[in-house]
Image (cartoon, rainbow, N blue to C red; front, side):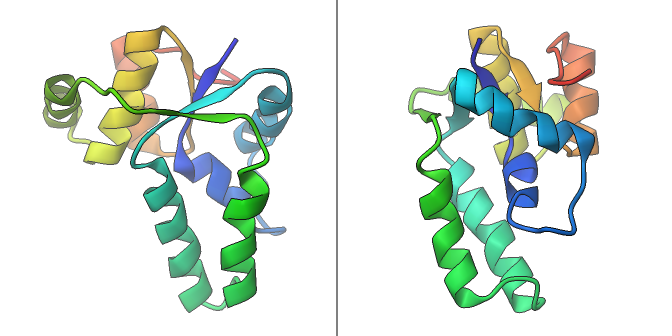
Length: 134
C-alpha cells in the first residue's frame, strides 16, 4: 500500500552517518509500494540537501546527484491538495505548511506517514494517521 514520504526521511538517505530505523524502512517500501508526496516535497528535499552542502556534509555534485537517483524510485506527486485543510492542520498542530501538506495527504488518502519530524509525528498520532514502522 502506498504511504506518504516526508522529506525528513528521504534526506537522511543522502548521508552515510544518518541511521534512523524509521528512515531505513521506507526504501524497501518504495520498491514494493509507491510513495506519495505533496508538491512542495522536492523543494523541501533540495533545501535540506543545500543546507547540508553549505555545512560541508555534501558536495555540490552530491546535492545534484541525489534527487536524480531518488527520481528512479516510485515517488508520486500529489497535485491536488486541500489547501484549506492544509492551513487548518498547520494552525491546529502548529506545523509548517509542508508538514501540514504531508499530514493532509495522508488523511485524505488514508495512508500511513513516514516522517522523522517530531511535531509532524505527534500531529499524525493525534489525527489518527498511522506512522510507518510504528
